[in-house]
Length: 67
Image (cartoon, rainbow, N blue to C red; front, side):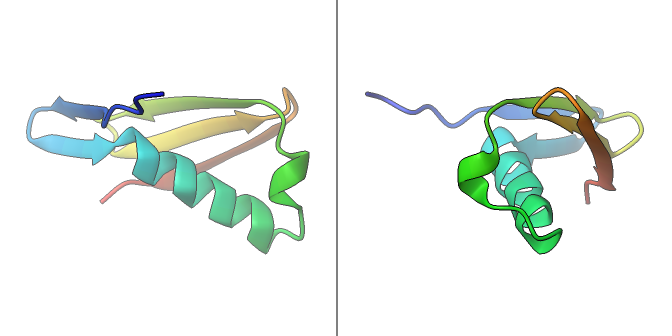
């Protein structure tokens, strides 16, 4: 199956959805969790704030700055 590269850009701030997803997975693992336990992922990228917010498995919330 084709896996497209998806970019979001607003006012000169650009990121790749894959980069955001990998960053969230790394945060999840660094917190002592297993990637296989990541069942659902919601990602909210706010370019105007340069922030990425996420919810894992409908309960674990987090955020990080996007450079």
